Image 1 (cartoon, helix red, strand yellow):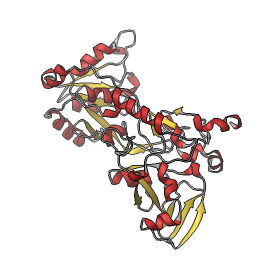
Image 2: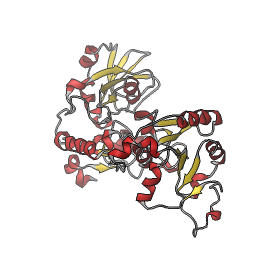
Image 3: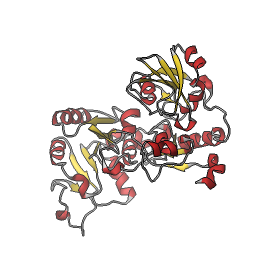
Image 4: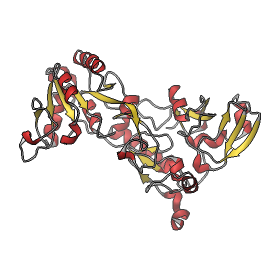
Length: 382
């Protein structure tokens, strides 16, 4: 590691699930036993580029979702989708374990299709896929997209987490039934996330579409709650939904984002981007992260702004009264202790964190607006 530090500011790391500051800064991670084989790089957290905008502490790179509907098909989408047809998102038999009740509820409203890999082309060998499911086996991509065109409901089973398929289905005019996790999943309770350098909690199979897309394209439902499932299915069955793809997942949207990063991202000098004109300061509730405090206001936490708020003058300018000041090397600084009135500034720049929180502290949060469908960029960013 020592040999690359001279060049560290030039690195960009492709990181599917994200790396939080407390795992990235090696001394803090070691002190707090934040163990991960992917942690300890001591990079600016914004140098980690993720598939989805998981955490504002990292940069959202994303990917391109192919669109397979032409203009005529988009105009005639309701004619194409005249069948009440559902397609289940689960390509392996084990993913279907425990889904029997859900399938029985869905079959009351929709004919159910699947693309589960067959064992020696013998569907009877599939242990968890009900016999009434029309399983096509693994399909070539063109046949799969043709099936999506005729499908109204795309059904999640809870796994895989945060894949591209729900966006592809929504872009084909499907409604995604997104399983809600009553007990959020994280490295603390889910083997899949063990060792990953994040404490991020997934509240559903696909948090991005839950937060940034929503109804009528996405219904986030506890699939073990038969009443909630029935209500959602009835609503979806009677709805008319057009294809939708967030701009940030189109080829043009990704090129706009990457082009802006290339021009504006500079981790080798202390300049500020996005522009300061987009900064909106908020004080979080006790124990609340800046990510959540900003999100509650329809904004995004912007970690690049933390240095602008990390002093007493900036705090008081924004109406935050401090009885005293101290330095702190914690992921929840800068912050204010609501009980004592003491304010804390961050003493380690690599620990600036949008997701850090502590029950005794209110975070001093740098928020910004964002372009609808391009969450990585503010309105003044272009």
